[in-house]
Amino acid sequence: MSHLLEAGRQLLAKALAESCFEGSLVAEPLGQGQFQIRLQSGHCYRFSARQSPWDFLLIDPASITRGGKSAASPQQWLLDAQAELALSDITLGNLLAELQNTLYSDANTLARQRDWPVRRLAELDGVAIQGLLAGHPKILASKGRVGWGQEALAQYSPEGDQDFALRWLAISKDCAQAGISAGQPWPALWRQALGDNEWATISQRLGADWQSQYWLLPVHPWQWQQHIALQYAELLASGALVDLGPMAARYRAQLSVRTLSGPGDYDLKLPLTVLNTSCYRGIPGQYIGVGPALSDWLAQITWHDSELKHLLVQRELAGIHVPHPWQRQVKGSPYRYQEMLGAVWRDSLEARLKPGQQSRLMASLMHKDTSGQSLVAEHVRRSGLSPQDWLTALFEVTVVPLYHLMCRYGVGLVAHGQNIALVLDNHRPVAAAIKDFHGDLRLWEEPKAKAAGLDPAVSQVLTKLPAHYLIHDLVTGHLVTTLRFISPLFEQDLGLDERQFYALLAQALRRYQARQPALAPAFAAFDLFTPELLRVCLNKVRYRLGYDDSAERPLPALGHPLANPLLHGEQS
Image (cartoon, rainbow, N blue to C red):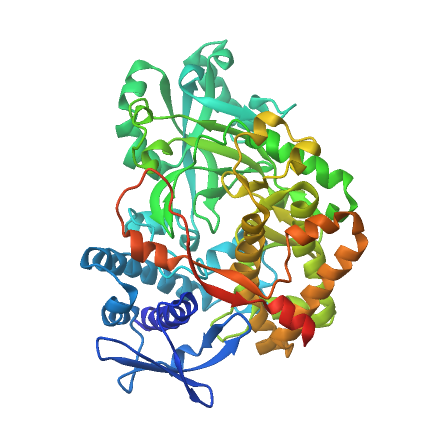
């Protein structure tokens, strides 16, 4: 019960803070770091908090009261704030259920974290640590995983800390689409997961020339049992899909749940028709054919551009998508039915590390152990660098290369905490890795990428945006969704004021701009030093749209503009 109570207290603090940030609630300052929120239901929440440069309240969870009594129930808060959040009863009921799922998983994660203080966490590899991390920092129901029950969570979630076997199918090439990196043979990918006996059995089952007729496709065991065996029954009966059964290789879920680490030098990304955070976690088919060529191009430009020498591309080596034969004919069919079966093979970052190096998702730098100590502060202390020097190194291998990709090549990547990883050498930032180019990469409407050699066939599939929209892939995706939650930890544990944090970032960006005078027109188009930035609100989308099916994935909502911490940090 204690872990569930603590999980509720932390989630309530997050709910109050994010709701104020998004403008759904208004916190009245009472002086001396005290705030209150009065609700139309007649209830009043009070708490202690500090205001961050992002117009964001850093709330002490233990200080929250409701009607003068200690409060730790995000469910009660949802009921109290229904009017302010403009929730219908249907949406409220579904959101309560999703919050219950999140609290269950958060409590299990807290139980594991008890044995992992940051001094031990700092020694783990980049995959093992992911089962000890919190979910999405902005979305309230960050581990909703609607569709999974207790057994699925225990077996397949990151915090479950279990490995499992995948089921394999042979897919007739007539009913699937695929893409593969130039020079990458399919058998080399498959053989890393399949033993000699399994390979021989497959050849006996499918015939000697099977590679000319079939692709092999791994399937998540839950997805097979819950969806594929039923929804693709006709293709299975006809022989267009051949069930090869489970294979021996074992895999483990990363923080994103559908990305798996296993044998060989690649990770697997598999669709899971589970509602988690903002959408169902399938794999869209529209990018499968171009993903490998796109990531090959990105890798090539990093090899030849000195500004990108510290940026690693986790290439999408290959991908397969198997559309549903009936759902594909319904233009407005719910998108979850269009994304049920497929796979992406992606470079493993762990396999590319040098001896002594560690990988860290940027999301892990937000982590605090059960005593309140932050992991990022532990890495800084072990590095032997000052907080200022460590941060400068961080920005030079993360924000600066991401900004250069945008200004030089017109590429915007939504670099949130799970899409970008940091490489540490002796706990010092030396490189960063980017991944996940299926829908999280867009292009500037100016043809910079095409001029830099991107295949027009790839370019035409990708979304094109004007500069004032594309810039928010960096601002919202990285600064607001990632750095907003890391900068307070430098002040809390290392004594570095948040304003100085963003002043150091501004200095790194100004140094970069001084190195690249030829890109001045792009710097003007992608201006990171405007007085105000867009405020993107994710929870409001769920409140507004509810849980109805849609043919498209939901888009975020906008709130009141944000004062730019970069500009104010530079002026401080």
